[in-house]
Length: 226
Image (cartoon, rainbow, N blue to C red; front, side, top):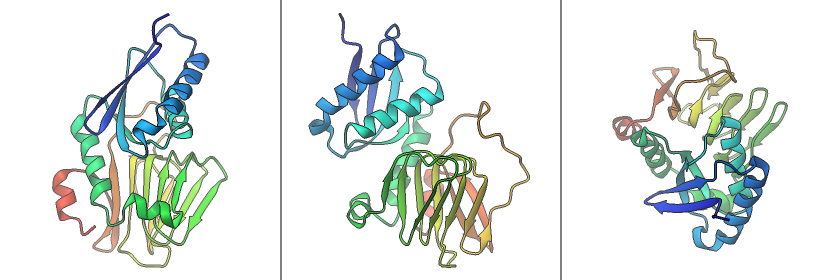
Protein backbone atom coordinates (compact mmCIF):
# COMPACT_ATOMS: atom_id res chain seq x y z
CA UNK A 1 0.00 0.00 0.00
CA UNK A 2 1.36 3.41 -0.92
CA UNK A 3 2.10 5.96 1.80
CA UNK A 4 -1.22 7.76 2.50
CA UNK A 5 0.59 10.83 3.86
CA UNK A 6 3.61 12.56 2.37
CA UNK A 7 5.20 15.61 4.00
CA UNK A 8 7.27 17.96 1.88
CA UNK A 9 8.99 20.99 3.39
CA UNK A 10 9.84 24.33 1.84
CA UNK A 11 11.01 27.66 3.38
CA UNK A 12 8.61 28.59 6.22
CA UNK A 13 6.13 25.92 5.25
CA UNK A 14 4.98 22.34 4.75
CA UNK A 15 3.02 20.66 1.99
CA UNK A 16 0.94 17.75 3.22
CA UNK A 17 -0.13 15.26 0.52
CA UNK A 18 -3.18 13.24 1.64
CA UNK A 19 -4.59 10.08 0.10
CA UNK A 20 -7.98 10.92 -1.42
CA UNK A 21 -9.42 7.41 -1.01
CA UNK A 22 -8.58 6.59 2.60
CA UNK A 23 -11.38 6.85 5.16
CA UNK A 24 -11.09 10.22 6.89
CA UNK A 25 -11.00 8.92 10.49
CA UNK A 26 -8.23 6.49 9.58
CA UNK A 27 -6.37 9.24 7.74
CA UNK A 28 -6.52 11.42 10.87
CA UNK A 29 -4.91 8.61 12.90
CA UNK A 30 -2.18 8.26 10.27
CA UNK A 31 -1.50 12.02 10.47
CA UNK A 32 -1.21 11.79 14.26
CA UNK A 33 1.28 8.92 13.97
CA UNK A 34 3.27 10.63 11.19
CA UNK A 35 3.77 13.85 13.13
CA UNK A 36 4.45 12.08 16.42
CA UNK A 37 7.26 10.17 14.70
CA UNK A 38 8.58 13.40 13.08
CA UNK A 39 8.24 15.62 16.18
CA UNK A 40 12.00 15.65 16.81
CA UNK A 41 12.62 16.87 13.26
CA UNK A 42 10.22 19.85 13.27
CA UNK A 43 10.67 20.72 16.97
CA UNK A 44 8.79 23.97 17.73
CA UNK A 45 9.14 25.55 14.28
CA UNK A 46 6.50 28.05 13.13
CA UNK A 47 5.25 27.28 9.62
CA UNK A 48 2.44 27.60 7.14
CA UNK A 49 0.83 24.46 5.72
CA UNK A 50 -0.84 23.51 2.45
CA UNK A 51 -3.01 20.46 1.75
CA UNK A 52 -2.70 18.54 -1.50
CA UNK A 53 -4.35 15.52 -3.12
CA UNK A 54 -7.66 15.66 -1.26
CA UNK A 55 -10.49 18.15 -0.88
CA UNK A 56 -11.10 19.11 2.75
CA UNK A 57 -13.87 20.99 4.51
CA UNK A 58 -12.97 23.86 6.88
CA UNK A 59 -13.86 21.61 9.83
CA UNK A 60 -11.54 18.86 8.54
CA UNK A 61 -8.72 21.39 8.07
CA UNK A 62 -9.17 22.52 11.69
CA UNK A 63 -9.19 18.91 12.93
CA UNK A 64 -5.99 18.11 11.04
CA UNK A 65 -4.22 21.20 12.41
CA UNK A 66 -5.38 20.34 15.95
CA UNK A 67 -4.13 16.78 15.44
CA UNK A 68 -0.72 18.05 14.31
CA UNK A 69 -0.52 20.39 17.32
CA UNK A 70 -1.49 17.59 19.71
CA UNK A 71 1.19 15.25 18.38
CA UNK A 72 4.10 17.65 17.88
CA UNK A 73 5.44 21.02 18.98
CA UNK A 74 5.02 22.39 15.48
CA UNK A 75 3.19 25.74 15.33
CA UNK A 76 0.94 26.11 12.28
CA UNK A 77 0.78 29.84 11.51
CA UNK A 78 -1.62 29.64 8.56
CA UNK A 79 -3.01 27.51 5.76
CA UNK A 80 -1.23 28.44 2.57
CA UNK A 81 -3.49 28.75 -0.45
CA UNK A 82 -3.20 30.61 -3.73
CA UNK A 83 -2.52 33.95 -2.06
CA UNK A 84 0.93 33.23 -0.65
CA UNK A 85 1.76 36.92 -0.21
CA UNK A 86 -1.12 37.31 2.24
CA UNK A 87 0.10 34.37 4.30
CA UNK A 88 3.69 35.60 4.28
CA UNK A 89 2.52 39.03 5.50
CA UNK A 90 0.82 37.30 8.42
CA UNK A 91 4.01 35.46 9.32
CA UNK A 92 5.96 38.74 9.08
CA UNK A 93 3.44 40.34 11.43
CA UNK A 94 4.02 37.62 14.00
CA UNK A 95 7.76 38.18 13.76
CA UNK A 96 7.51 41.97 14.03
CA UNK A 97 5.10 42.13 16.98
CA UNK A 98 6.72 43.40 20.18
CA UNK A 99 6.93 40.08 22.02
CA UNK A 100 8.47 36.76 21.01
CA UNK A 101 7.03 33.28 21.08
CA UNK A 102 9.71 31.91 23.41
CA UNK A 103 9.10 34.68 25.94
CA UNK A 104 5.39 33.93 25.84
CA UNK A 105 5.97 30.23 26.44
CA UNK A 106 8.24 30.95 29.39
CA UNK A 107 5.59 33.22 30.87
CA UNK A 108 2.88 30.61 30.32
CA UNK A 109 0.89 32.92 28.01
CA UNK A 110 0.58 30.48 25.14
CA UNK A 111 -2.73 28.64 24.62
CA UNK A 112 -3.10 25.63 22.33
CA UNK A 113 -6.64 24.70 21.44
CA UNK A 114 -10.03 26.04 20.43
CA UNK A 115 -12.19 28.18 22.70
CA UNK A 116 -15.80 27.05 22.42
CA UNK A 117 -19.15 28.60 23.32
CA UNK A 118 -19.20 29.66 26.98
CA UNK A 119 -15.44 29.41 27.54
CA UNK A 120 -13.51 32.45 28.79
CA UNK A 121 -9.72 32.83 28.68
CA UNK A 122 -8.37 35.75 30.73
CA UNK A 123 -4.77 36.82 31.35
CA UNK A 124 -2.77 39.69 32.78
CA UNK A 125 -0.27 39.50 29.92
CA UNK A 126 -0.18 39.28 26.14
CA UNK A 127 -1.24 35.92 24.72
CA UNK A 128 -0.94 33.81 21.58
CA UNK A 129 -3.82 31.41 20.85
CA UNK A 130 -3.13 28.46 18.53
CA UNK A 131 -6.70 27.75 17.50
CA UNK A 132 -10.07 29.38 16.89
CA UNK A 133 -12.24 31.48 19.20
CA UNK A 134 -15.78 30.32 18.46
CA UNK A 135 -19.00 32.36 18.79
CA UNK A 136 -19.95 32.64 22.47
CA UNK A 137 -16.33 32.32 23.64
CA UNK A 138 -14.27 35.21 25.02
CA UNK A 139 -10.59 36.05 25.31
CA UNK A 140 -9.48 38.89 27.59
CA UNK A 141 -5.96 40.28 27.91
CA UNK A 142 -4.59 43.34 29.68
CA UNK A 143 -2.10 43.64 26.83
CA UNK A 144 -2.17 42.16 23.29
CA UNK A 145 -3.88 39.20 21.61
CA UNK A 146 -2.68 37.12 18.65
CA UNK A 147 -4.99 34.41 17.34
CA UNK A 148 -3.42 31.96 14.92
CA UNK A 149 -6.83 30.91 13.71
CA UNK A 150 -10.24 32.56 13.45
CA UNK A 151 -11.78 35.10 15.82
CA UNK A 152 -15.55 34.58 15.69
CA UNK A 153 -16.34 35.26 19.36
CA UNK A 154 -15.36 38.14 21.65
CA UNK A 155 -11.93 39.66 22.24
CA UNK A 156 -10.86 42.38 24.70
CA UNK A 157 -7.27 43.69 24.65
CA UNK A 158 -5.75 46.44 26.77
CA UNK A 159 -7.94 45.44 29.70
CA UNK A 160 -6.00 47.80 31.92
CA UNK A 161 -7.69 50.68 30.07
CA UNK A 162 -4.69 51.52 27.92
CA UNK A 163 -5.34 52.02 24.22
CA UNK A 164 -1.88 51.23 22.79
CA UNK A 165 -2.60 47.54 22.24
CA UNK A 166 -3.81 45.39 19.37
CA UNK A 167 -5.58 42.20 18.30
CA UNK A 168 -4.38 40.09 15.36
CA UNK A 169 -6.21 37.14 13.80
CA UNK A 170 -5.77 35.03 10.71
CA UNK A 171 -9.52 35.38 10.12
CA UNK A 172 -11.32 38.30 11.79
CA UNK A 173 -15.09 38.09 12.24
CA UNK A 174 -15.73 38.95 15.91
CA UNK A 175 -19.02 39.18 17.74
CA UNK A 176 -17.51 41.91 19.91
CA UNK A 177 -14.07 43.51 19.98
CA UNK A 178 -12.68 46.12 22.37
CA UNK A 179 -9.24 47.66 22.88
CA UNK A 180 -8.76 49.74 26.01
CA UNK A 181 -11.92 51.81 26.40
CA UNK A 182 -12.71 51.73 22.68
CA UNK A 183 -15.21 49.34 21.06
CA UNK A 184 -15.05 48.25 17.45
CA UNK A 185 -18.18 49.20 15.54
CA UNK A 186 -19.27 47.73 12.24
CA UNK A 187 -22.41 48.22 10.20
CA UNK A 188 -22.11 44.74 8.70
CA UNK A 189 -23.92 41.80 10.24
CA UNK A 190 -21.64 38.85 9.62
CA UNK A 191 -22.58 35.19 9.48
CA UNK A 192 -20.19 33.09 11.51
CA UNK A 193 -20.62 29.72 9.85
CA UNK A 194 -21.86 30.40 6.32
CA UNK A 195 -19.52 30.39 3.32
CA UNK A 196 -16.96 33.14 3.94
CA UNK A 197 -14.67 34.98 1.55
CA UNK A 198 -11.02 34.01 1.31
CA UNK A 199 -8.98 34.28 4.50
CA UNK A 200 -7.56 37.75 5.02
CA UNK A 201 -5.35 38.20 8.09
CA UNK A 202 -6.24 41.43 9.91
CA UNK A 203 -5.09 43.59 12.79
CA UNK A 204 -7.28 45.77 15.03
CA UNK A 205 -5.77 48.76 16.85
CA UNK A 206 -6.72 52.20 18.14
CA UNK A 207 -6.24 55.23 15.92
CA UNK A 208 -7.68 58.74 16.46
CA UNK A 209 -9.87 57.58 19.32
CA UNK A 210 -11.50 54.62 17.56
CA UNK A 211 -10.76 50.99 16.82
CA UNK A 212 -9.82 50.36 13.20
CA UNK A 213 -9.44 46.97 11.53
CA UNK A 214 -7.16 46.57 8.53
CA UNK A 215 -5.76 43.81 6.37
CA UNK A 216 -2.13 43.05 7.14
CA UNK A 217 0.20 44.33 4.43
CA UNK A 218 3.92 45.04 4.29
CA UNK A 219 3.16 48.75 4.08
CA UNK A 220 0.91 48.68 7.15
CA UNK A 221 3.49 46.78 9.19
CA UNK A 222 6.04 49.52 8.50
CA UNK A 223 3.66 52.23 9.74
CA UNK A 224 2.40 50.55 12.91
CA UNK A 225 4.19 51.30 16.19
CA UNK A 226 4.35 47.62 17.21
